[in-house]
Each structure stands twice: as C-alpha cells, then as structure tokens.
Image 1 (cartoon, rainbow, N blue to C red):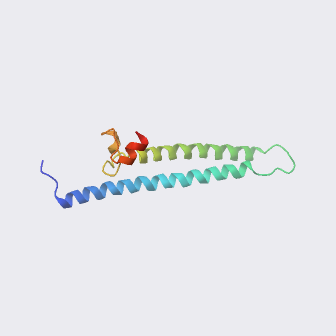
Image 2 (cartoon, helix red, strand yellow):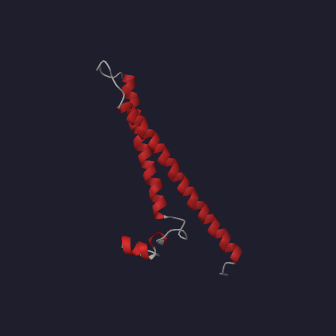
Image 3 (cartoon, rainbow, N blue to C red):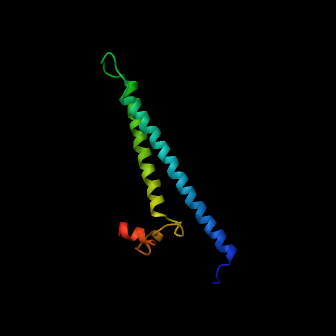
Amino acid sequence: MYPLRGWQKFIQSQSSLSTCTQRFDSCILHLLSYFNCFFNKMALDNKKNMMYIESSKAEKLEYANVCERLAMAQKLLGGAYSLLLLGLEVEDQHHMECGRSRVSKTYSDRSLFE
C-alpha cells in the first residue's frame, strides 16, 4: 500500500471531523428533545387542580404519553452521548483513540483520570 499524500490526509481528516460534528449535532438535538419532554412533564406535574378531583382519562393518557416520550428521549440521549464519548469512527480526534492505547495522550488527562 502506498503512503497517503498530503491532500489525501487532509480529505481523510476532514471526513472524520465531519463525522465528529455530526455526532455532536446529534447529541445536542437529543439533549434539546430530552429537555422539551422533561419540561412538558414538569408542567403537567405542577398543574394546579383547584377542585381536587381525580384527573380525567384524557389527562391520565396525556401524562402516560409524556412519561413514555421522556423515557425514550432519555434513552436516545444516552446512546448519542455514549457514542460521542467513545469516539467511534473519529479516532484521530479522540483523546484516547477509542481505547486502543489504554492511556491518555495528554499529561493532564493522565494525571486526573488514570
């Protein structure tokens, strides 16, 4: 196999950087979705019931749907965040090279976390 030329290395680094930003964007979108679901649930929890009567079936169904969406948003956020932390497919930008080296590249990471 021939060694990579300068422009080939540049294109390869740009494609991995693009993958990294896509992962970051995905994580941010899932975080915003989670916050939206969380605040919707919080609004339903804090809704005042002036007459202290039992909630209707529609309200119970709405609350169950909000809780289900919150659980799904939390699961998706966890998956996106773990992919961002693990750095799969972006070994060049990841500080631990996805666990291949088993040590950190920088002294501060080594002294703080290992």
